Picture 1: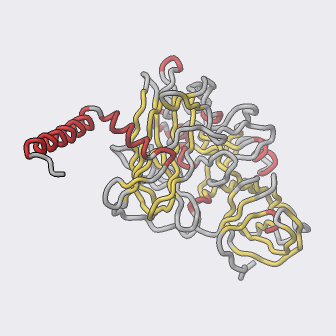
Picture 2 (picture 1 turned 120 degrees about the horizontal axis):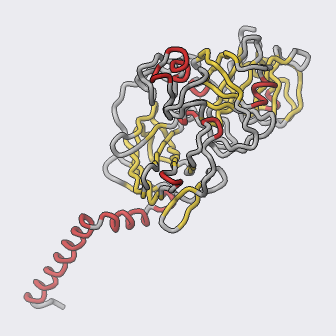
Length: 424
């Protein structure tokens, strides 16, 4: 049936009026528009955000690997007022939430994070992201915002988000209402991939603090095995060795241990990175911790980022088991640290609480160090040696993880292709 012309005009005008009101609502009430978009993309479902972009909302429901945060009506907030991460020795309550990794339609190298949060005076909320490279390894965590998008060191297939909350005046907690992320591709000049992981000589201190809680939520046990570095860029999630260091003492013993805490002194001092990529203290040379420069040379008036007088030059904290059992130290000492996540070789993940590293491919060779559970090892090559029974069955294959440093493949989950050793 055909409508009269006057009635058609009325219908047309009504449709136009509704469209105009909808447009005004989006402009005038962005929170309403944002809520509608978030509802359509909840639980991290990917939605198109324009040509070539992928957009999603971070899930803000805590689970087992999150620390001191809770979800309630209105958003994510701190769960209480315990002191901050053990190694930094500050009393500012902090919390952290990790989202499940979000798979992208195709690899991207830039992530923008749009934060909606209530932040009382003195409080902060920070968003970090990381991604998986082509070889399966993780990039470092990189801060992301709308003003300064995160540019990762490679195009990544998946992105994980980390939300960091710090209390404000009087312990007041911020409240995170939403985190909207979008992945893009941008042109960049990438530094050459290092042929081997960087190593630096730094001063190590014993962390101790048994019963305290690390930055990733691990409760410190007696004779524990992990390390702390003064930057969250290399903080491994609880129970993982995504970021592992090899620490060697002057008398030759080494330990491979995961990075589970942040400190000592600073929390934004990724001194192992080049000055142009370093998050803070870019006036310092690569490999020189700010605490070392402050203590020895009076850098920043001899103070750390919290304006505390730096009383030792520490660039790494060692848990008691790493300090005493792994390295055989009795006093704070200079050590050589290798930052293994920067290397692109095959990975081996330790599957037992503590694995002896031996001087040759057999248990008759003397132990030369320890590898902590979940530590990620860089495998140079494999050799045939003594048959060993372990968590991965019976095998005579041994993995060389350094000069005259071997572990049995029976206790290691190997990821990536390995090759036979051609030299001792």
